[in-house]
Length: 408
Ligand code: SAM
Ligand code: TMP
Ligand code: ZN
Image (cartoon, rainbow, N blue to C red; front, side, top):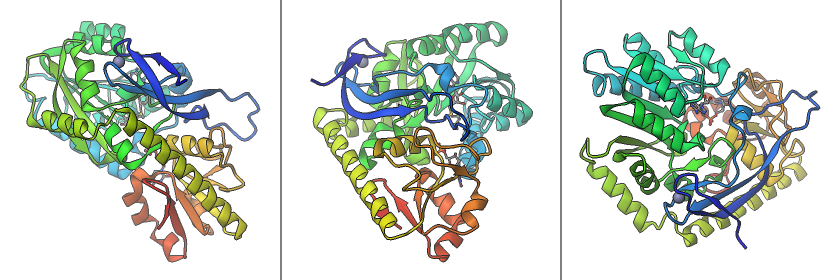
């Protein structure tokens, strides 16, 4: 029998469609000498038969994921820096034109978006529970509250600063299982004519690309226009716009307003129709996705074993949270991939979660290129292939696994 859980949005029945097995915390990079036991949980995903929300069946404690040493720094990618500078500029030109406007960002991380807002002298607040990245944001002139956003936080902000014209969250809302508390907080804090804008990996793109590595502990929800529309309605909010984004392998930026406050754009109806035609959250589609994932696992492991038998050297590129799912689901360890190169200082000198492959700085990669490199940071492919042309000139080949295993 398929496993079920209770939907975190509507209390409906969530039925699992994929089980990626025992997985570690995807951003826990332990030092090689650390002998403390590593926490694992079972990574299974299901969809709700009532509201269609796709979600994890098990939740990890939030403090185990988001803490002082949370290693992900948003500004690590130049493409993402440009994306968020443009996002901030768009808010400045559209929603923040009134007198003394106020914008709140959930999960502002190192200030990649709010630093532009701060430089423009606009009233703002970042809510960020991970102390290390919050300090970096503060160092860039961003006003930060070190906290988890939820209903009580929203009430505190309302008392201190008044209503927000914009509440923004990038790659953060899908990380928060306790959605009712967050959306009650949003409904409290939002100005009558304000907007709640959030962008997260789009489940339509995940299915289309079989990008199963978007599934890990921090990604609790996988949104669609349909599930977001249903979710919003439960909290007096309404989905009024959607925009496809090319970042992180395909995202959607959703705009919510108070119910009835704004006319929904044609893009909302179009995306809803597209999802309906694709039967996006129906059983056959979900089971087809699972079959494709198993195929990728088998092909990737077979390729890596073949290369090892042929005496080739293989590295990984980008110690992404996504790679934790791939490595642990496929059972890949340092026998098959000798190291993973990553630009993040907090990950270097550590080992990958669960699979314990050493993480090294890019200088090690450049200092004697391997024959092959598995591109775990495939969502930054353009940026990486452009800057690593010497690797290919040296005869090195990239291995990709989205939407299927291939060698470039
Ligand atoms: N917005 C940045 C971006 O798009 O690159 C950061 C995304 S990062 C993957 C997710 C961030 O959400 C982390 O910095 C984490 O600390 C933060 N976070 C997690 N739970 C949160 C909550 N309840 N309220 C506010 N931020 C939260
Ligand atoms: P992300 O896919 O969650 O954004 O994580 C990207 C990871 O890849 C992060 O640890 C930084 C690393 N990275 C590199 O090592 N080199 C690069 O050129 C880029 C863009 C990212
Ligand atoms: Zn539901």
